[in-house]
Length: 450
Image (cartoon, rainbow, N blue to C red; front, side, top):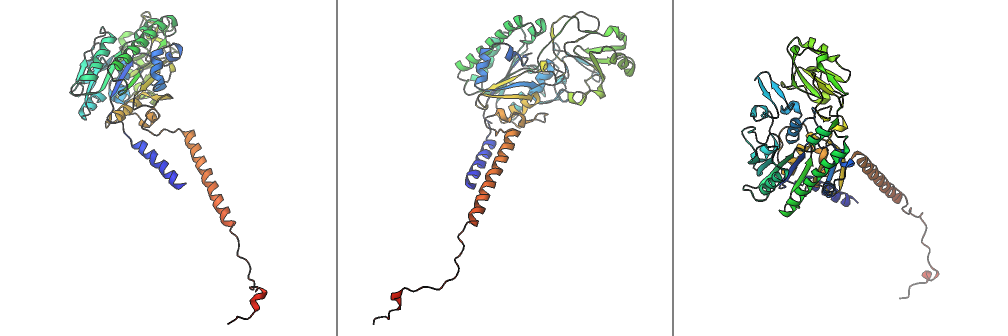
């Protein structure tokens, strides 16, 4: 029995010690792919992908739930306050610089973190490649991916895929890590709103066809069975309405503040006394919370960076903060990251991943250490936990708390049973017979014949 247990324990250790260090990885993001789209719409290509790999139903993304911040969180494993991309629109008072999604190429904004494509090249694990992922065309910490496409939204998805597959298949040096980004279904989610199932069905079916195109290109190039692929997103989408507007002009004059970032999380730089501006805003609308920077809830991990403005306004789900303009979209994101409508999903397949496995949730900061493990990289300091993704990985011992308790109880019962058997066996040894004289047979009394 002990030898069997020792063999089992050795097997567990060997499994845990195993590393996927030589693996290659392709990370794909479909912007604004809300987690429950998987349940609402028939997506045969994506379902085929999931059946052969793993699915995380809900990914808890980072606050604020917008595009640039969350894409940088995925590739750094850092909360937004730590990596410095705290919004799609930012202002740095010390440097007197402004950042927007149309003015994002200054390394100044990105250099507070080291993305995984840089670490991959710095540690000599191979080249990195990128097709349109936010930040990949910026010289972050004096480096870009060795192969990259400068961002251009007019470049078709198919062209991006063909470029990435070509880099993965025949580049010199070998590309071991690549990222690929596509703007849908985010753009259509803003336009129609996620509750417009008729239009969103058409959009999601197109997204699914593009996933099918990616799969077919990887199969045709011979990469399908050897490369690891992660498909995920940055955030979800919530429905908006003209009936749910928070109009700041009804509460405060525009000469009192500058609006740095807009709805549904608005960043306010006071021009007048900060407390006066805050007092006017905190009672503005019951569907909006105003926070002084130092009072932002800890769970948001969104206060320890100079680019976070002195006052932050957070709208309730579905509500829109405006100064006095009309609503230009029927869907939006950026809201509280605890809301299920803000959560994306994650699907993955390849030699590093288990097959046919579904997991309930992870945090998007956990994706980074998992990717580093697959690539055999020593990660930079990060906020994620590899243990949260172990159940997704083929080379990791995965056990949850109920199973662990069951195994401990089972082992205790078995050991107790064997102990009892041994004790009982010892107690059942035949006791020694009492002393008795040796009885001779009658012919033993005859004299010996010489």
